[in-house]
Image (cartoon, rainbow, N blue to C red; front, side, top):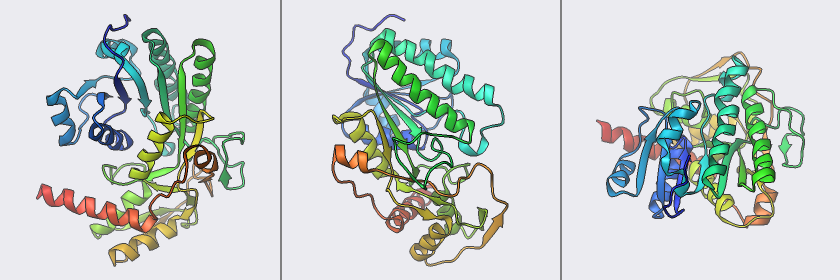
Length: 326
């Protein structure tokens, strides 16, 4: 790939049409940044992204990340890219482990090929969204710290951890700068309520529609939930500000059980949904809460909104969106 002679002032977002990608895209567009947005063919974006494309602030590119010939042709402007946000993944924790070799090919090997292209194009920095919820596994006290050795119990977590190590390798070999964000469990606007991830969003949406909520296990599983606006704030601090580390946990730093989530939804919406309990899943570790002291030491105080406030904002968004569709 030939490096472009253009100025390096663009940001490339891989997985730009996903939940985190959409919110990150909208925040960067509001800040006047010039973006290249990459996602699968047929991916849908909010109207604001279409307007940004019309004005020239954003360029939408489609392709398959695991088909290098396709995205190499689709991203001739890689030489103009200063920073890449790597958010793309073909799997999630609940559906991984089914085809481990295929998942590694689609995610780890594809990322290695992409890093090679970044080195050739002299991209300055790669910001990788890892998974604070899956890389640590079960072997911890429940509070996960970056210094701890990680033992993932899903191939999804193994992929994320392996990509982290590859980023370190490419920094050592080629000087490709990077940051890793081990994000907890984000929720909020633009997250699919019928997907395989997102307890808070799914439960809130179903409660608003008087539909039953399905809980795997007895509801005692504890996770670290963070509202998406706060997650984006943290991601951009890690990406843009000087820090002493290249790896950071990012979450609220406190745990809430699934039963706590349901209680918060009841408190906010004033209605109690039917709850159906299903058999627990082997991919669900009992407790996963992120220690965010490293993040706060390097980037200052971090005060994400409470779970109830996040649910309230999410409910407002859902009602507004569905009202607009009527």
